[in-house]
Image (cartoon, rainbow, N blue to C red):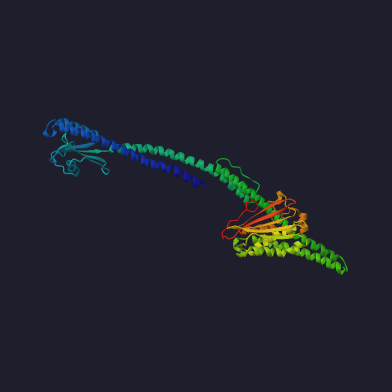
Length: 475
């Protein structure tokens, strides 16, 4: 990256210098040519007036005019010809064409009263053809041809170009040096980030970076530290999850082993004691099976959205069926289940998974409730989402724990969880199901005042949807 950055900086800096060199030299040459052409035009005008007033074509004052012509031709490194109205060359400062005839296109056009100005780039010559007219401009008496070499102008531009080349070379060297320095300045923080990422790949999540400089660099630093904190929390959560899984799976097995050892240590065990122990073993086996099933469900929820079996589901009927199935459980603790629907709702979703999510929410409302309490489920929808609210009159959730209840095996009250049963995976499964449907869930609760879980899920399933928030998104 540093090499490419150096090359890019050099190109961006040097390219304008070369472009400016070409444009500047062309402009200088053009301006010098224009100035030379203007000087030649002025001279030919003066010479034309001098020829007319001195009766040059009648043979008067020719030596004076020729002297001025030779001096001007020498000064402008050129050649001057005077042609009469019969196209005869009266005077050639080179002395080679005197007495000859000139029928060049420039001469013919100038005889018609038109001044000709031309730059012959191939020969490096400025060419003028100026008519010599009477003072009243009524008659063309002849033509002045002036050819001037611009070799001196080209030499001047070449000298300027060489000086510019020296300056450009110095600037190029300075630009290369500055590019290397700037590339090092820009890439050094990124290199620190890369080193930190390498350490993270090795399993070290304890090293934050604090970069100074441009606001973008500071933003990268802050974003990196935020990501690092999330990875650290994720690693801690993973370790805690493994520990909890090990503990949860080991506890029923330990209980089964204790019960089995107790039976093996006793001889002639009474039939009723034997049945009691076997019943306890069955309970622990059922608990082990429940944990394993929930873990398998959680693994399935972690897979891609493509695993969803989407169909059009009548949400009203599904919720009524869930409450009907759970009413016997609620009746054992005299807990009332209430369903309130504001309108018929049909949505595209995976009925099995959504059913599991809402069942978990209602079951929690029953488990963590007080005897004689209630659980209320309400359903509503707008043009884009349907909303399910599960409210209970139970023990509530302390505010400091509300952001963590969706974590796997997280326990607000371990003793309470053991009494009520469950694996501690229900809300984690619920969260994953809702996220798979591009939905969102949040909890509102006060300790000893009950809890409310609000779920929002799109009515139309999007194949490439974006997951909604979990606990902090506004619904």
